[in-house]
Image (cartoon, rainbow, N blue to C red; front, side, top):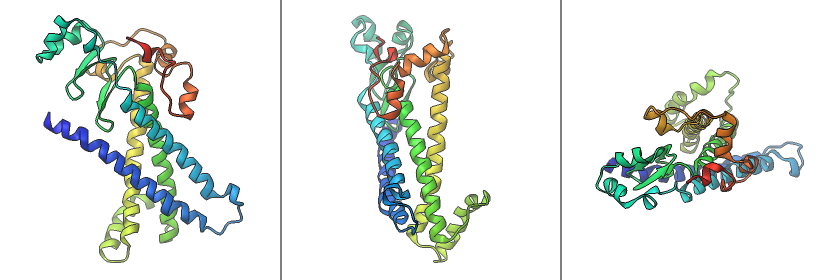
Length: 271
């Protein structure tokens, strides 16, 4: 439990540090290098301006939904259940309440009983459940897109600085070992080596978040949560459109454009 509590503190700090480093590289390195590109594009439609707007849009949605995931913790059913039932899990026997109220789970890290519990996310330090599922999926989606955007611009920057061609797909796979040998031989600057390391970090985070987002959407379509799959519980026998509407609400398009609360969702209002 001590290791999990430590991870619950370190993981959010790690995510915030990666976000700050990404912002710094984009604003002070990648975008200025685009401004120095001698192209005939007008300032209004320059690549630097268009990329800056796109990056700010993706980052604002990722960080906005990240904050909403933290602020909107799942419902604490321990406050509304009968005290006689609650005495069991307060003493450590939480399984009785889980079985008495179907679809609930007691999280030891958050010290609450959550409805429609999916999992505990260490990167947000919060449980994912009935109130913040939609924002968590949007957070994963826009984080993966922001990482992809940073990866593309980072590759373009390294390609220009090192005069390296990435036309061959194997060039990216061999970039790291070649860069490490050049760095220790003194032929590569520390700042350039740092950008190369960040390229692989963005690739890993982007793929992980994209996979997590697709997995969560698939579970929602099936009417399940990760906790129910882990416990072998059967999926809800309902149409997939109803399952999606329950999580994303009828105003789902608004949530794709700006980070907002999912107040129009039955999943959010469910008690």
